[in-house]
Length: 411
Image 1 (cartoon, helix red, strand yellow):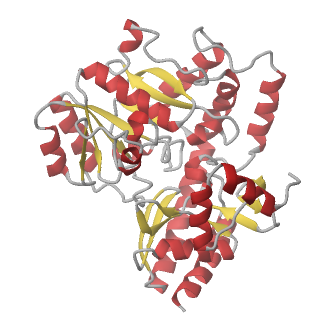
Image 2: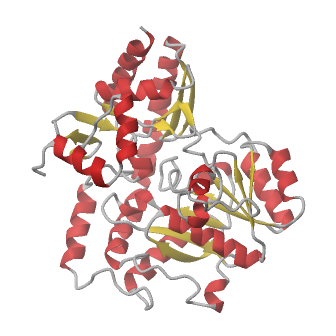
Image 3: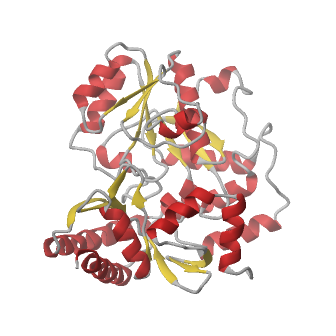
């Protein structure tokens, strides 16, 4: 990349995302990503940052993981391209089999998409067809994407902005409120409950003991399907392949995206049990996606699934997660500004004092060489998501930079 930083900002401010640039500039962040490698990104001006935002889990394996780069080069040498979604594909079949096998319970089918929002759309459509009901229950300020159906569940502010919300078909309840969930499902007219296992944009609040299991039980009693949105929490970030497994719950549908791409080629999927996928036997043309399950993407996704399911990968995540938890606990004991640590594996939300405490922390960390994003629906919570191969040395470096940033924000 030879363009100057000012020129890149000028182009994007003029043609791509002017208001987003304005917002980050108000915070004091003018990041333009150039080189990237492993846990690091580099601003075009040369500034080196540890990336613990990882774009919501897209860089689960880090930036430009060597095995993924090698696999992509292999794909480009193969006599394949995106492929044709109408016809059978060996690569699509292999990845679908791997995903179904790696899921808990009795999953049956895999429908591919090009991104998480599209995969959520597929999940919602599948649940509606299977139950012949329209309504979807999600949590207050949940986030499941920004396309038509995905944007109309959870926090619908942005859907309403485009006049695309569907208030008659969407119901929201507070997270961790079993009583409210029972009430919402009591009329037995709900097609599905969709939940992020640990809601990312809400600041990663952890499910209370028994909450997810109780929701699944209510779903079973009322003929409602359970959709686990694992776009940000899946693919071994929790120490299990799917975070929902940590809570002993078997969903009817699992949605995966972001990290499935290896950070190199877009691919996403909705994994369905037999009931949810019944439409595939009735009308094979009911849903089509030109780029969903592209053959190059599938070749990469195969390698991703192989890497994240290795016993040594899961052992590493669980070991480093414990080290991270101990390190964060020590920091919390030392500084009252860090109010709460919400952690499950390498999924963490750090709650700070003040309504925008995480925004000021994000800026301080940026100044100190760390890129961490604040939670969109709770600006007091910082998303703290190191990549899977984080080691104790990197954790120590992150703790040093986090402590320095806390001191700056409280002095």
